Length: 103
Image 1 (cartoon, rainbow, N blue to C red):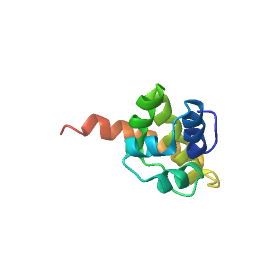
Image 2 (tube, rainbow, N blue to C red):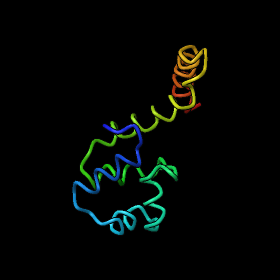
Image 3 (cartoon, rainbow, N blue to C red):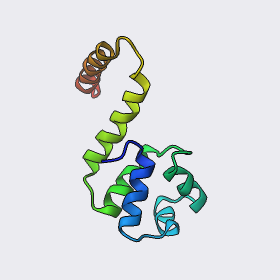
Image 4 (spheres, helix red, strand yellow):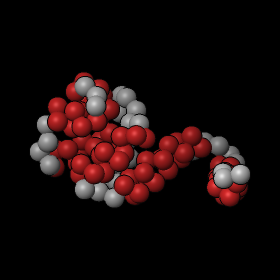
């Protein structure tokens, strides 16, 4: 993902493929005005849109998801004094939850 804003990145992908706004909006099951706002960064992209976007434009879903969620987390933590400590604690929690999710 090259752009700081995922909406801008989606717009770049759509325009590169010469895809009309209405077509991508239909695939995402949203209206054109919502997609337009999403591309301008005025509305949030949702996690459930990522697989559709990846499949539509033939990009790696894992990479898109990692970048998308990574940017969300970074935005939440960018001005936190203890950001790196928080990330380490979260990593331990994720490991714990994954080990114990079947219990």
